[in-house]
Image 1 (tube, rainbow, N blue to C red):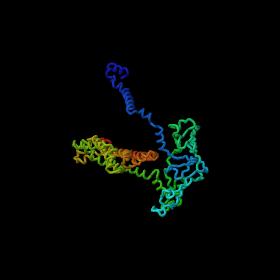
Image 2 (image 1 turned 90 degrees about the horizontal axis):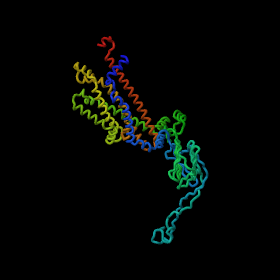
Image 3 (image 1 turned 45 degrees about the horizontal axis):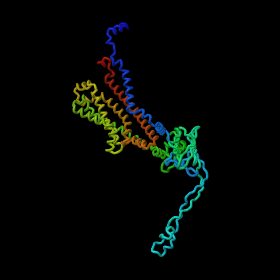
Image 4 (image 1 turned 90 degrees about the vertical axis):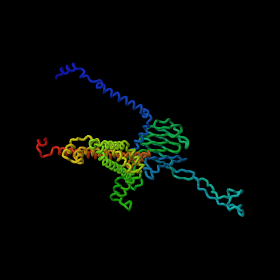
Length: 517
């Protein structure tokens, strides 16, 4: 037919070629409904208000904490000098002296209270009286008591810090007992410090310095490099550095602070640091028992997570396998058995794995056993449902063929059903094994053991975000590896089954006509 004939037919039968109203407007109506639903969700969840009130600076600081660390010097104001202190567990060790904090030393004089000298009790008026020797009398109560005599204050000359400078890349804070000068790039602000009273800027504040009310603390921002607070009694600085501090050795290790070449030389040929073991064993022990990163404990918890996922999935697959045959209508003709088994599956999978984890944590206590039980219960219901649906969708011709030769019911299931569903069963179990590796992390946060509990503990402190990122990376690596292993095994399994079926359907060595027959 040519175009004219087609047009002629369309003209004579317009109703047959006219699209329905729904087909003509389905696409624009669908797009309009999606837009309306998006606006509805934005209104219902107050997305605009949430975004407006969001503290993006705080979110950025949290993200920066994942890949960096801070060191905090506290510079306290004294009458004519400064004192510089670091946190108790500083990443710089017990004697921090960073090059980005410079100090100006000078000899100062300061008054200190001398130790009081004890007075000698000499109460002659009490001699021969009925009162105990040395007891105070009305005539001389002070002289008759054993009280310490206060000593006059002493003047001490010593060397102390009279000025300090904290460097933040292109910014700096210059500090003296009564004056603080903050510089960022080309801008500079000077604060007059009235000790224990006020912080007063001499010029208007730029946008990177905030003072919420006159005389109060000034909050200084240096971007990623850090921040500081200028208070009326001290300056607190947070200096940020990219990377993970002391990731291999902590400050208590004899290898801490040494270059890689020196550490390698000590391990290979150096004299023993600990006479009871080699330097290599000592270094490995220091890595595992790193007080800041706790590598040994983190790796052990990660192994617990992997074992939890594996054992829970295997047990669920073993239990769900026979129950699925009871739930399948075409395998088990009893409607009562079908319904009871399916409702049992619904009960197990309708309760979330996290809820099961909470339940078993109360029953067994915190630990991997609760996690394995939660995975086992949840996956038994889910795998049982998937297995039974796969059984109900098999081709009955194979069962009829096996049954026609007089095979027993068990043999019918073995050779007429299992070859069809076994690849599906194994593929689904492998997928759940890989998925449960992620799920085991979540349930670990409620006390079910594994690295999830360790991750939750690090997040609760609100300070160890680098440790959180470290554990997240380990989880990502494990999930990536297990996903590839699961995919590889599924491909090999499906390929082997397919090749086996081809060989059974078309045996080699026969002519084409015989194969077709």
